Amino acid sequence: MIEFFTVLGLALALGWPLGRYLAAVMRGGPLPGDRVFGLVERPIYRLLGIDPSRGMDWKHYALAFLASNAVLGVLVWVLLITQAWLPLNPNAAPNMSWDLALHTAVSFLTNTNQQHYSGQAQLSYLAHMAGIVGLQVVTPMMGLALVAATLRAFFGGRDADDAGVARGGVADVGNYWADVVRPSVRVLLPLAVLWSVLLTGQGVPATLSGGPEATPLDASAGMETQKIPLGPVAAMVAVKQLGTNGGGWYGPNSSVPLENPTPFSNWLETLALILLPVAVACFIGPFTRRRKLTPLVLGTMLAMSLASAGLAVWSESASPTSTDVALMEGKEVRTGAVPSALWAALTTQTSNGSVNAMHDSLAPLTGLVTLSNMLINAIWGGIGCGLQQFLVYLLLAVFVAGLMTGRTPELFGRKIEAPEVRLLAALVLLQPVVLLGLTALTLAVPAWTGNSNPGFHGISQVFYEYVSAFANNGSGFEGLGDATRWWNLSTSVVLALGRYPALLVPLAIAAMLGAKRAAPEGAGSLRIETPTFALTLIALVVILTLLQFMPVLVLGPVADHLALATLAG
Image (cartoon, rainbow, N blue to C red):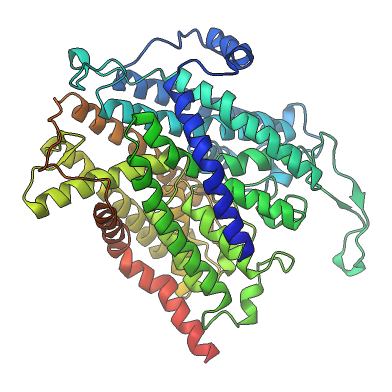
């Protein structure tokens, strides 16, 4: 429990000033260090051929986002299917099949990092460094850029008039390229360098040489020698944790001692899980200059986080099933049940998805917690993506609260009308249609399913894979045989559907609202920066994202828990 309180306390203590700095970076004004960072940023702008001071409307911003994703996706896909012929491949990793390469490219492009491969055996150093880590740097900053543009659009853009309305009816929501480059260079990369050094000091490998060969102590293993896979692991671990990326250099992620060798490295990696998501929650107030927004967002997210983490820790340490010794299967004894549960809760509260224990081996109720976290996807969420999803819930809560109190639903003085509600409804319905539809289809065709458990847990395995993909999380119940063409292609579709509408639809809604004249806020206006509204928002989140999935949750983890508790009794 000490780790729980120190991680959360330090994340809050560091997240507050980091959030203020992040707001200043995204606002684009003069900052200390401009001369140094400019040496990196200006060549990038020249290479891209763009003027970072030139604004964009929301449509051009969205097109730039989609175009950059398309180009990067193709480049990484080509790299993965040709890696065997390229340099920096000391372990002779083969070329990926086209469908596995497609899933891998889409997975890392969507900041999900869902892995249907083991990196130490199936990726070259070049593919890791240029393809995987490259995307792990830029994709979280793309999410941050989109939420910054959305917030600008809510208030009429950077060039709004005195009434907060976009001039000419078209809001300047910022420059997409500058919004990605600035936080990458000024925030994520410096933090990643610091974490990489700290992890290297703990023994995480940082080398370009091939791994050594060792003689197994157990002769019955049938191997005369075994190659120990190494590589520039520390750099990847640092950025995958800080950028809410997830995955790992090794297939089992941070449960491997080479990726997470000491208690301090485990603490560092756990802290990195939520540091920037907490900072983004603190960033909204200074960025919009509505200071009370930060307590609303931070307080709501923190309340849900504490409830989730507390239930996960209780489930693994004090629930009726926690005494079953079988639950230690898939967990590192050196790590222990409570740190494993804390990591599982935090990695699914954010969109990270890396693991230090196999989620397939968690207690059923802990599995329920991780599924619920991903269905909500806004407890902290990914960098930018979590706040973007929170804004969706905020709009819905304002609409519902307005109807309940007999007031016209409005946010920041702008009326929420039928066009905005239709877009919100489509976005909300997309999640159950995709997740329940594909889960049912996959379970109906056993040849596609590939699960290792035909009972209640088998339902959880399939549902978890799709939920993880849609939430852009990437963790999995790894008893599932997901390295097949069906799983590669179906989850690739889910990855894209979970990423792009969730980022672009709120931007479009914000632009529609920003074009409306803001009414002065008075005594009759709905006050959203209050504890009462925060509770209303949490209730809406629970109803929308948990109750609509209650049948599959009961058939999966709840039934699994009852069956296990019966056996234990």
